[in-house]
Image (tube, rainbow, N blue to C red):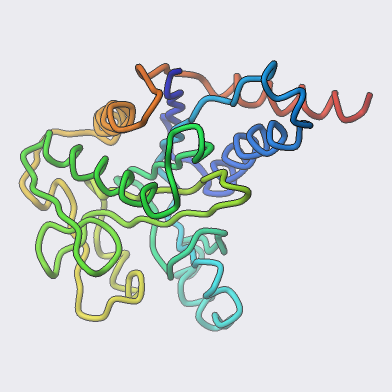
Length: 249
């Protein structure tokens, strides 16, 4: 089995990346919906890593959605320069934007011997291994995400599970403008700062480069995965069209 990697090369609206993620999740859920006698003849869809840079966007986790006010949303939109979207992931408000590698991992936990806690650990370890390739030491603390010091957070982690199908994933700061984090208490952690590979001294690296390294680290850490296979957006959209046509028959 291969880890399929779809990288969106241009700055992408958050809603479009979410749409692609939903298509990938639906493939897994449709497989789980098959009656048991049919499942052996229909292999589990392979895991997919969707990586992209979003337009400036603030998102909040599902538990925070009922508490956030319209006044807060207006403030986060920064006079129309940023978007705001509620997300199904856990966690609190965070930021995605140019210079950050957002990586959504869509897979069936059982197919890779994972449980929710070990899936989160897998995401954190993949980011730590990626940072290590660039000479940056990352680690975990009692707080979520990956850190380079007790005060400096380089990556956020947030997941969503439905019938043991995982989605969402990580946001790794590469070359982004960290001032966007000044508008929020990132992930609800007072007194902490955001950092990036660039701020940690890594020069001349692109988000595309880091996406390839992250994909390789994830493939190495996933049970039953042999290699990375790059795919294109049109392939994912074709799955969506095939599913729609099948539903209409």
